[in-house]
Image (cartoon, rainbow, N blue to C red; front, side, top):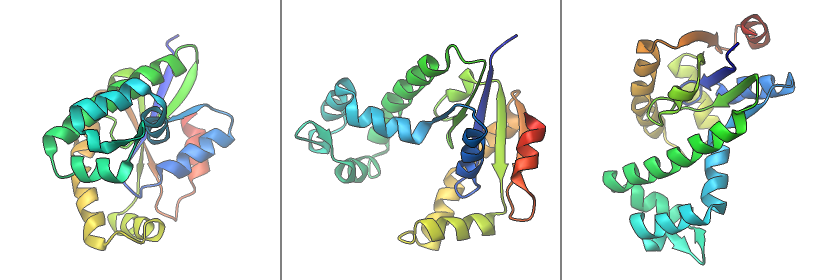
Length: 191
């Protein structure tokens, strides 16, 4: 039997972290792409060197990534952002492959399953969905520095991921996280 590789995905504010935390509490391993990407960028000397050489030397100070400087650089230059994403996504996917190799069932949480190409390594998608108005409230609560228009722009930017999920041939399940349907029974049914 093929190992079960399940992606937990969804738009910003949908509740991916809630589902991830429930799955972890049930004893299943979950690879958190955001956390691992930060870990790789903080500790992988080759990645740090490549960022300094190919993105900007000013993004690295005393051998460490200056996240504020790096963000300012890449979010004002699409080419540099694309190079950074390609570099980090490749490293994360390699790390995930090593991490998941001998696991019969594993989960990976990622908002950018298709743009990162991680979808190629999974065989099931659990898409967490919530109404946009609720997602905006959730994101504004956890990130009060973001304006409503900033949040809406991020939601709009992620629509390409939603479309890719819907067009994919990968087995897909919806977990509704609208504050009226219990999540745990939905997860238990999928397991």
